[in-house]
Structures are given as structure tokens and as C-alpha cells.
Length: 436
Image (tube, rainbow, N blue to C red; front, side, top):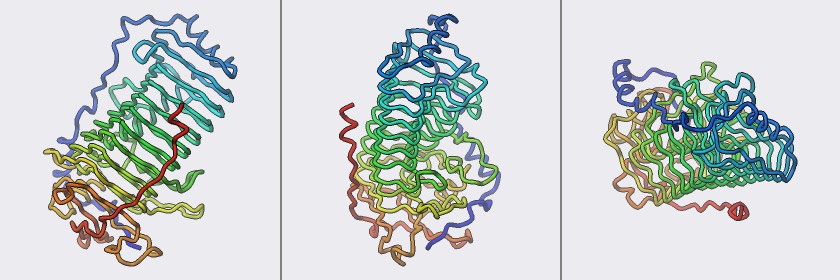
């Protein structure tokens, strides 16, 4: 097995890091939100009615949220219901603010429910997650906007839209912004579609984590630290997952600073390691296909394929989880390298920017960390992990793969992509979701 170098080693001088940091700080404190001063402000009676509608919701009911600005100091919770629709008057017409909420994490939570649709409203300033759904089957998010209005983004909630441990999830025509982890996060779920949606100003725009059978398409991810992520992380109830397709998306200028809270315990918050300027990151992914996307002007790297060892976090494989990325197919995407300097604020950014095959401070289009499982072979040039790239403009791209070492001076990078020119079709079946 090839192993990664010590990511905690200080590679570069503080002066260089400060210079790059100044260039990378774009829009870090700018939050654009709708002017609500002219909106109808919901009365206490209207707020009480909304709370009662959630508490007393019966299966088969529709909860109407009329036009207006609702300031709530309690969560809205649906628990163990079926066939319920929560219907606002429109993203710009129904706004629910949780800025004064002092207890509970999420603004809206749906748990243990089947066939629930949330649509046509906006959520502001939840102390934790904007909208969280857990242990649900057939969960539809449609035309929702979830964001935070704080100037200090490190005080924002973790996820804007957060379906976890669900089956049959649709996120359609939604907007997610300014979360300090992922804007649209789908975790430990099966059968997932994220489409026609926009994520901006987050640490990660869209993240598919430990999910089986997922598609992300016709989305826009811009001005995040990382655009679209496909992660398989250790220590979760749902271990290894596979079969994800990322296609027909615009992944553009994801050059925002990474404002995720530092993981002082070094226990494994991988999102803190995302270098600003990352388009697509595949970490410990299995059966992932990335194609027909516009991956433009991400200042550090367009696409990264990496195994979990690159994080230097500890992990446990006793539940069958594997740290390796394998059966990856990246093809027919459009790339454009920006004029901006790559990131040096994160250790992974330093590696990609300073130890690549094209010289220091060069943006990379495609990077493979070169870590493989000895059980699958002993020669990286034989492509034991079946990492496939087939880009029409690949001769003009900056492609690097690595021979990593504990000693920084021994790290080597190569630009020969020919061992990885291959095809690997990834199959997903979300046909039944497309009818919802």
C-alpha cells in the first residue's frame, strides 16, 4: 500500500501563506438576503397557528404557510407522519426565521416519516441545521431556500438541507448558502436525486456522503470552498456506499475561504481540509462517474480523486469500510484554469500547489493521489484501483498523480496520464424518483 506524507508538517513560510490567504479571501463576509422590511410580519396568533399545524399534523394533510415573515423561537417538527405536504407561498414570499431560537439544533426537523414534501418557502438562521430529515422514506425538498444572515459565517449552522439515513430523496430547484459545512448534504441514504439546485457561499456546495445510488445533475455550485463532494467516511452506521453520478453541472469559481470550524481533536472532520478553489473532490469513493460538467476557474484543482489516508485522520475498517477510492470514471468535462493563485491555507492545497508535476503555484485540472490497495496489485502504472480519465482535451490539462512519502523531500509527482486512460460505466437506477 502506498501511504501519504505527514500532512501536519509545516511546509512553507508564514509569509508565503499570508500572501496566498489575502488573495483567497473573496466574499467571506458578504451575505446577500432578501429585504424583508416590506413583508407582512406574522402575528403571534399566526405563529401559534403554524406551530399547532405542525404539532397536530395528521397523515394525508397539507400544512399551508401563508405569505409573510415568521420569527420563531421554537423548532418546527414532524414526527412519524405519512403523505404530508408543507406548502409555502413561494421562496420570496414565505420566510421562516429561527434567529431567536435558543434550544434545539435544526430549524425544521422531519423524523421517521414517509412521503413528506417540503416546498416553496425560505428558512433563515437556524442555530444548527436549516432543515434536517432523518429515517424517512420518500422525502422531497422542492423550491426551498435555506441560508444564514450572520456576518461572521463561522457562527452559521452546519448544513442547510440535511437528509440523513433516508431512502428515496429528491432535492429539486433548491438554494442553499452560507453553511459552515455543506449547503446540500445527503448522508447515509439510498436512492438520491439532487437536481436543478444552486449552492453558493458554503464550505462545501453539494456533498453526497456514504450514499448508495445517487445522482447530482443540472446544478450550480459556485463560490464555495469546494463545489461538489463525493465522500465515504469511516465510523458511520452506514459504511461503504457506491454508485454516484455527477453530470451536467456548472462547478464554477469555488474559491471561497474554508470557514469550517477547525477540528482541534484531529478526529476526522474532513471538510476542514478542503482547500479553497476545489471543484470536485472524490474521497474514498466507489463507483463514481463525473461527466459533462463545466468545471471552470476553480483556482486550486478541478477534480481530485483521493483515498482517505490523504487526510491523515485515524480510521477503523472493522465494519467493512474501505479507505480507498476505486472504479472512478471522469470524462467529457470542460475545464478552465483561472489566473488566480492556488490555495496554500490547507495542507492538501499545499501539496497540490507546490508538489505537482507542472511546477510550484500551478493550478491542477485533475489530480490522483496515487494511493492503492496492495491486494489489488503492486504497480500503480497497471492502474490497480481502476481510476479512469477520458477527457477530450486531456493533452492540454494539468494532470498529476503522486508517489507519496512520509518525507516531504521524497514526494514525487508525474504527469503521464496514459495508465489511467480507460472507461468504467457507473450504473444507477433512480427511475422511480423521476416520476415524483
